[in-house]
Length: 247
Length: 247
Image (tube, rainbow over all chains, first blue to last red):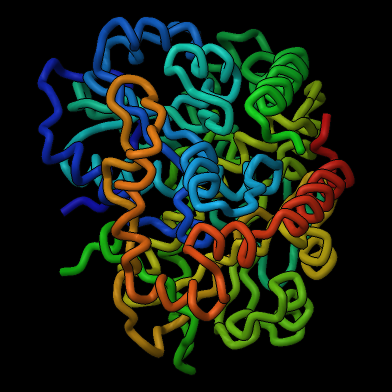
C-alpha cells in the first residue's frame, strides 16, 4: 500500500465524484488529533462546498481554477476568538490577541492541515495546498466572515484525482539536514546541492520559457519577484494588525 | 496496525535505545517529500545528538528534561540563507528576507516536521513538540549557530517511548469545523462545546491544583498568562528582525 508520507503529489484537477462524508469526518478527526500547543486547539477549519462561496474565495487565490472546480475547499485558520469567548464567560484574564500566539497557533493549524491532507490521501483523494492564502488574507476574511482573532493560514482544495502526476524533484537530503549544528554552505556546496535540480529537464524548460539564464532567476525574478514580496508582506502585516495579532 | 494520524500521543520519556539510522533517513525523506511553496524547500533540519549541544539548547526549552534525555533533538528551521546564496551565485535578484516568505516557509517547515513526526511514529518512535522554540529563539540561534535568514520554528525530541500514555481529550469536531463560512459562537455554543473538556477528571484536577475557579482560568492565567505573551511576542519580533525577516 502506498504511504502518502513518501508519495505526496499536488493534485490540481479533480473528477466530478463527490467526497464521502466518512472521508470528511476522517480528515477532521486526523486534524483534531494532531499535536497542538497546550491542547488549546487555537484553530478552526472552514469547509466550503457552496459554489457561491467558492466564487468569493477564488480571487484570493488569483482565480486558479481548482478553487471553484474542487468539490471541497478547506480553509484552515488560526482562531483565538473561540478561546477568548470561553475565557470571557469564565471570568479569566485572557491574552491571546498577540504575535507569539499567532505563530504558535499557525504551527498548530498547519499540523492539523497536514494531518487532514494525509487522511485524505489515505482515502484516495488528492489535495493542493494554496500558498496564496497569506497573500490575500483580506479577501478570505471577507468571503468566509472571519471575525477578529481568526486568520486564514492554509487552504486545501480536495477531490478525487483526475490525473496521476509523477513525483516532483527535491533537493538531496544532504541539502536539508545538518548534523549537530547548522553548517553554512560554501559556494561549492551550493553548486553541488543544486546540480540535479538544475539538470532536471522540466526545470530547464522553465528557464527557456522564461528567457532566463538559469533556474534561480526563474524563482527569484519570475515566480517570487521582489516587488510581490514587498507588497504581500505589507498586506499580511496589515491584515494581522486588523485581526488583532500585531501586539 | 495503528495509524499515527489518529493515535498521536506526546512522548516525553525515552528508553536508552538509540534511533536506527534507517529511521532517521525515513524521517528526513518524509520531511522532504511534504508539500512546500513553489518547491523552494525554504527549511533546514538540524539533528542534534551531542550532549554538549543538547545542553546548550536546554535553557531555550526551560530545561525540560527531555531535551538532554532524548537520543535525538530535531530543530526545524525556516531557511532562506541557502536559497539566497544560490541566487547570488546565479546572478538572480533575490528577495527572500521578508515577512511573507517567513510565514510561508514556516508553513513548509511545519509540514516537514509533521511528516517527520508521523514517519517516526510509524517506526515505533515517540516524539514531543516543544512549543518553547519560538519563546526563546535567540538561545537556539546561538546554540546551533544559525546564520541570518535561518529561524527555528519547531523542535522535536525523539526516542523510543518509555511509557504508553492514553489519548488526550480534544474538543468535539463540531467546535472546530465550520460549514461553508465561519459561524461565530453564541454563549450557549461556547458552554456546550467546552462541557466535556471541563468535566474531564484530569482537567478538574488542574483547576484544583492551581486554586482556580475553572479550566479557562488555568489556561489564561497560569499556563499562558498575559505577561508572558507580551514578553515572548516582543522577543519573537526582535529575533525575527535580527534574522532579517521583519521587512
